[in-house]
Amino acid sequence: MSSNSVVENSADQDVERSVSFDYSELLNRLDSFFHSQHTRTLEWRKAQLKQLLILINENEQALFDALQADLGKCKQEAYVTELAYLKSDIKHQMASVKKWMRPVKKSTPLVAQPAKSYIYPEPLGTVLIIGAWNYPIQLTLSPLIAAISAGNCAVLKPSELAQQSSALIAKLLPQYLDENAFAVVEGGKDETSALLSLPFSKFFYTGGEQVGKIVMRAASEHLTPVTLELGGKSPCVVDSQIDIEIAANRIVWGKFMNVGQTCIAPDYVLLAQDIADDFIDALKHAIEKQYGKSPKDQEEYGRIINQRHCQRLASYLDGQDVILGGQIDIQEKYISPTLVLNPNENDLIMQEEIFGPLLPIIVMPSREAMLTFINKRPHPLAAYLFSKDEAFQSQFLEQVSCGSVCINDSSMFMLNHELPFGGVGTSGMGRYHGKFGFDTFSHEKTVMKRSFALENTLRYAPFTAFKKMILNRFIG
Ligand code: NAD
Image (cartoon, rainbow, N blue to C red):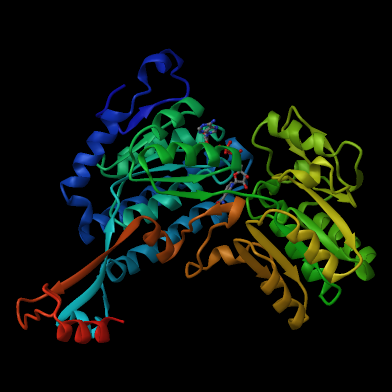
């Protein structure tokens, strides 16, 4: 394994496997560069961000091809959810990073006067970013954008499940970014485990809960700070006070985009009893409108990442009341948009995060029953409420604890760089996007600057009665 190349390994290089999984040289190399102070300057950060923008612009077709090969993503969806998202993220960071880097002045209490107080953001060092496969370009590069903006070096480990995207990132990054500061390691469990054993300055992981626990265990060894962007079952409550057609369109959009392989996709619908029949009809209609009578032949409808996940999803349909779809072609990694009515709470489809194009609908007798249903389960990453009733909206916000809420739409909050993105409880810890990403990859150093003027000796021993009286009065 060469420590000079940015691409340090490949998932296919089985021959190297037994001997090459020590990335300590790589980490040392990046850490040395970090300590050279180069990455701290505004110029360097902006230059790297600009290079990333150029990488995306100059390689648009190759990126589209990789996403098509990995997930059957059509160009338009790939553009909006991956490339355009990243470009807008980069531009936002470039426009804001100078302001974010500035020390933030804070007031100083009388007892410490004369002095000036600041919060001084500083980069962490060399960080490890472990990407997920469902938005393989966006979810790997978006944390990188924040890491660069905050002045860090980084090692990227894209998901091995999205092979073409991983290979493309590994090929392109060294051509555009500073090789002294960035590296891509390709591979799966073994490579990731080797990386996790090293004293990185931060682990930023996107993926499932089980590996999240592995990341956290590994982090404890070197007391490495972690951000975990995980998943979970995101509920979607449909109240009776709604515009049925609009709500159905928006749910179908959020659920079946990327064939349901979206961490914030509505996982299941809790539906008000009195509109149940009309709303189910509207959902069926919206699916046909957006994906046609035969989604398999529709360019806009992609594929499941691999046959294993296809089989996993197929098993969730065993014994279920499938009221639309249910067509499965494992060979082709295809599952049609599928609606399932009233599954049992203990069925797999209601126990596991679906992460595919199956939408269970549970008809509920009351709003209270819906809230109880959600709150009996672990904190979701996102929760959706469709309702015009402001009192119910407030109750929902008050009572449902989750990463993000969107009222009367699905997933739209992702487009706002001013909002943090992250989970709570089992849906994750930490957050990013916009300034929150900069903060996630920074340490907020406390600084107090005093002068030698006005020496006050009250704090020094011996503590006379007079000193004690004055001191305690000002400090307490
Ligand atoms: P995963 O957790 O299996 O894999 C993710 C990464 O972990 C990969 O890079 C992989 O190489 C590595 N990995 C896998 N097994 C490992 C092991 N034993 N030791 C060390 N590293 C290992 O991915 P997944 O679970 O299929 O991803 C789907 C999950 O990710 C869903 O729960 C989804 O909600 C969540 N997700 C969350 C977000 C978010 O932004 N919050 C985004 C996408 C996906």
